[in-house]
Image: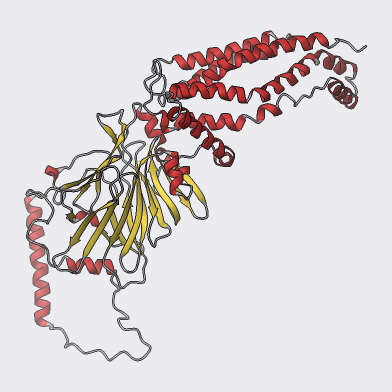
Length: 578
C-alpha cells in the first residue's frame, strides 16, 4: 500500500468517526421504554438472538485471562510431557489437553527407525516450539474438540494447559494394580473446567478414559471429537506397503463393518453412529476407540485426506452426557487377533481376512490356522519359518484325499477322451444322441466330467484363508528364516518367488508329460502360469511365498503317483468299442 493510499485510508476513518459522533450529538437516542411483562403462554426471550451455550460459556470465561504462566508448563511456556510406562508400552502425554504425543510398543521393534514401534508420527513445534504462541505441528492422538449440536462453536481442549496428577507420571510393573493419571484444567474465573482421567493396566493395551466438562443447560447433544492423528507412524522397512495398508474402520450397529483405505479418499468422509467402535490402522498396528461407561455407542467417525499422498486424518465422536461426563476405551497396540477377539463386537474384523461375502466361511479356518501357528511356535518351540514349512506339509497331507479323488477322476476322464471323440464324430448330426452315449460311456467306467472339479473346490476356502493369514499376520513380523530377514516382508533377493514359479512349472510339466496328449493351450499355460505367479507374488510377504513353495514341493510325490495311475488307466481302457 502506497503512502497516498495510507493517508486516504486514515482520512476516511477520521471522517467516519466525525459523522458518527456528530450524529449522536445532534440526534440523541430516544429514552428507553420498559417492555411490558410477558403474558402467560409467551416464551421469555423471544426476539433475542439465541447464543450457543458453549460459545457463551467460553466468552464468559475468556473475559478474565490469567496473567501468570499456565500451571503445568516450562518457564518458557512450552508444553510438558508426562510419561507412563508399563511392560507393554511407554506413552507420553502433553499437559496441553492431555493429548497423547508418543506411544511406543516395547515388545515390537521398528524397522524404519531405531527403537521400538512408535504409533504417533513424530514432528516438531514451529515458532520456537511454543504450544501457546506458536503453531503446533507435533502429531497428537486423543486430543479432544468439544462441540455442541452442529458444532458451529467448538472448544479445542488441547489449547489449555492442564495440571497432571501425579506430576511425574506413572510406572507400572508386571502384576501391578491399575493406576490413573489425571489431567485437570480450571479457568481462573471458575466458569470453565475440564478433567481427563487415564487408567492403565500393566497387561493390556486398552486405556480406560473418563472425563468431565461443565454441565450445559442446552437441549442439544454435545460430542467430544477425538483426534486419532494425521496417520499412524510408518514402522515397516518397505514404507509403500505400510502406507497402502493404512485405513480407517468402523462397526455400525445396523450397517456392519466397513474399512476404507486412506489412500483412496478424495474428500472428507463421515459415517454417523451408532457405532460399536472406530479406529485407524496400519499393516500391523491399530489405534481404536470403543465406548465405555454409560455410553453404549460412538457418535460418528470422520476422515479426510491429508496434505501428503496416502496420508489422512481420522476423528471419532464420543457422546457427552448432559451432566458433562463422558467415557471411552482407547486401544493402542498390535493387531493380535486374540486380544481383539477378547474385546468383543467383532473387533478382530478391523483387520478383515478376505472379501466381505467370503468372511463367514473362512473366519473359522483363520482361527484354527492361527491357533496351530501359536501351538507349533510356543509348545514345540519351532521358529515361524519352520512353522510355515510344517503347515505347508500338513495342509498337503490333509488335502491329499481331495486331490487324489480329483486326479483319479481326471485320469479316467482323460483316458476316455479318444472314445469321446469317436462318439462326437459318429453322432455329429444328432447332439442329443451324442450326449446320451457320452454320459453312458462315463457311467460304464465310473467317470464324471465334473468329478475332477468338485473335490478341488472344497479346499479352496482353506487356501484363501491361508493366503490372507500369511500375508498379514503380525506373528511373522520381524521373524527371520535362512536368508530371509523378515517373513512379513518381500524376499530381498527374490529367490522364493522364482523358486515357487519353478516348482509350479515342474508340477505342470509332470502332469502334461504323463497325460498322454497335450494341446497347444496346455503347453502355453505350462510356461505362462508360473511366470504370472512370479510376477504377482513378487512383492508379497516372503512367508506367503515360502508356504506355497513348500506346498508345491510336497505335491510332487503325489503328482508322480497320479502319473503312474494315469498310465495304468489309459492302458486298461480299450480304444474302440468291442
